[in-house]
Length: 189
Image (cartoon, rainbow, N blue to C red; front, side):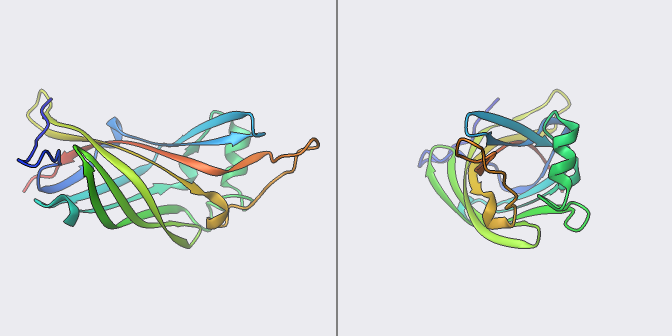
């Protein structure tokens, strides 16, 4: 695996159109349960695209997630999450993200701001993206690896269902950690 660097020490994805390879990528999340344990889940249906510019700060990122593809390992919980209490997947089948600004931090790390839409509520969010590397697979196809981490307050997107606990506290945490591990393939010209 090679990482491309400019003379300024910036690790970046080479210019071009990159499409997320869902077979080698994941879109996940973590949220506190009863304020004492962490529930992890992922979405199995998603897509994304990176229009990488020579100047990484002029690049654009877009993506979507099929809400009904949520999987936390509990069919009953997943059905509840798809219901109107949470995502209301029948009325709002997709979450979307579109970057508005990218800022280089150091090495291959960037701050990315963008519009996240959940249940027709759009809010600007900030995430950290790190270029993990760029390289060719055994068949000569170029891949770029990018890890994305961030967090949101789910209540700001209309995900307000809650159950208070008898001894104080809440059943479902309001902060949701976002965990994306993307392998993107350079689109043919």
